[in-house]
Figure: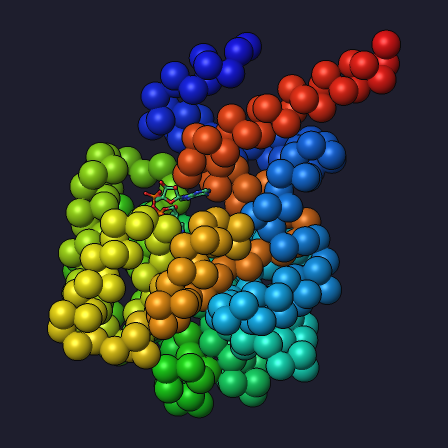
Length: 333
Ligand code: FDA
């Protein structure tokens, strides 16, 4: 296999392949043992232990960046694993408060046991929301593939009142959701959520979805993002524009300036390890930027989605593997 042949694989086919691989648990078990992948992973993941993440959060804070913490893990299949994940969130919220860091976490419902039972998931997220209220923390429910959207919004509607009663300010305790511009239903969901004064994170969507529910063409996903972004900038409550797309970011700043939408009324969000230059540039220009900081041992599916977002990342990984192979070949010789 040569690198140029990988480079010539059409972007969309490579993305579909990588996202398919992201769901293969057995591969994940192998990948997590390989030193080469672990080195690559360090670019996107703050570490395996909470202490590693707390150090990374401090460094980001010192650079003027806001943060949200994600404990890696998804699609859990046992009640015990889901409860353990929720316990880890409680400990993390406590640690954030203890270290004076941004009290802001992001979680996935499939990690909280949605695939086991809705009751278990509700109980786990309810415990986290209660702790967040105590600590004045913000909890964001990440959005997973389209089959989970109804359950996610229903759970948000059920649990949100407790969080909003306690805080409801733009930086206090609250429960927020995510909208994916790839999904055809998102304009209607956005309208409903704006009417409910929801804090929305807008992203493009990281999952392979059927054409019956999502835009198949990237250009349409981008156009849908722009339309939803403008709607949220004008009418949303402290929206989070989660993207590394420079054209969309420039459009947001231009519209904000032209329409007198103050930088305090919204924020940009980006992933840990992605476009650090752009994060710094926006901070220097006076915009709020929050970095999504994942940590934990269950990094495989998250890492594969990051590879799928940029084919150059795959080339980089393959080059490292080949280089490592050559070195170990020399050592063996
Ligand atoms: P796009 O994919 O068009 O990329 C724009 C440019 O950014 C690329 O040309 C490339 O240079 C750079 N870039 C993007 N991704 C990169 C990467 N991994 N490595 C290196 N460069 C990269 N999705 C979801 O389905 N549910 C969710 O809850 C969330 N949550 C979320 C939070 C935050 C803070 C962010 C930033 C993103 C998400 N996402 C998400 C992921 C999102 O849906 C999307 O897959 C990625 O953000 C990539 O899309 P962009 O908007 O960056 O645009």
